[in-house]
Image (cartoon, rainbow, N blue to C red; front, side, top):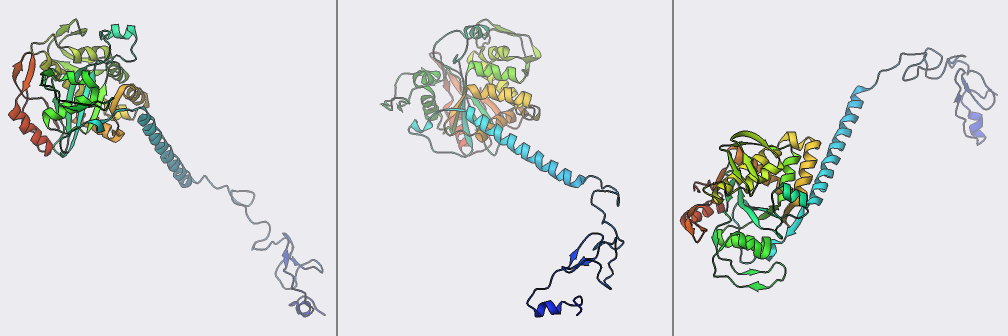
Length: 394
């Protein structure tokens, strides 16, 4: 009986048909023997699926075919993906690093009787004479003195909105009456004071919350964010970015601040920058001239910090950010996004996209500066409604 044609005999006996096995270099075999199936077309030396016989060519080259080149498209895709992952990881790492350095120490929720929110965002930017963390050598070098505690050397309101940024200096000698307030530490309510004081007395009496409360009561503007930097942080930021270029219109000296400048364009290091913004006795206008210098310098600092050459370059960005964030005190609701918007808005003031001014004044009384109430009311209305500022200051 012929077992080859269809295996019918095995099927009749209950045995499943055997699947032919193919051996390289030979025909199919069955369990009963080996050899080529008659009429199958398989011959010795001819493998299954190889029309020309022999071993099929192997991918990647070999005796039967040339070697294939590298798959550049695939490599470029993988490289691009790796680059995106690295950039994303670096960005997230930098964000969390910077966020962890922010000193969110000011609680604006304790401020009472606050004005209604207006359009846009208002930042109260404060420079203090805090000497925290400074060695005796640093105090001597920066001409800061050794007074305990801290006082406000400069105060500015930065308004950002749809009509460009507006930077307004608040002279520290501004005449105020301290309003009723809740103690930031005790929680105790204090009545309004009748005595006339200088604006910086509010900070000296109960810190940032009372300063915000006093500014809001005096202006009618709601302060959305608070930013404060001390002597050491200010000087370190300037040094970290390699100095700030500034055009000083006239030469001046001030022994108390350590200022000694010639007229013309020059690059100020941290020590010189601090002397420049603190000088008041070298000018006839005293505090008013100083506030103008402070605005000019801070705008220049922002213009040179908020640039691709600083932000993209890690050797400039990390030292500058670290120096500033270590000493920057902000409110508890401040985000890095809001802080970044503040710096870019200050840069806008320098580029001509915004307005820089002193608070409009009407004279003085007992050494305290009096505001021009009519102009201030108009200015506050324009800021609250996010309108173009047309009011001019001193």
